[in-house]
Image (cartoon, rainbow, N blue to C red; front, side, top):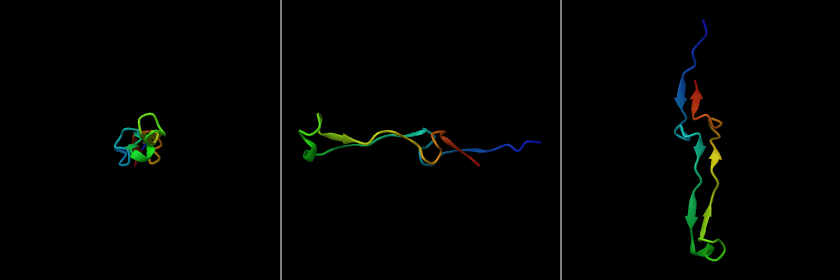
Length: 56
């Protein structure tokens, strides 16, 4: 009989599969970027490899 794997929601990305980027606004960036913001890009969750769950 095949063993059934339990899937748990990934604690890092909370099941979203992607970690959303963060934007920051600073007077230091005024004039250097169009809206004065610097953003980190969205990235695939490294804990669950973009699946949204961890097999346990």
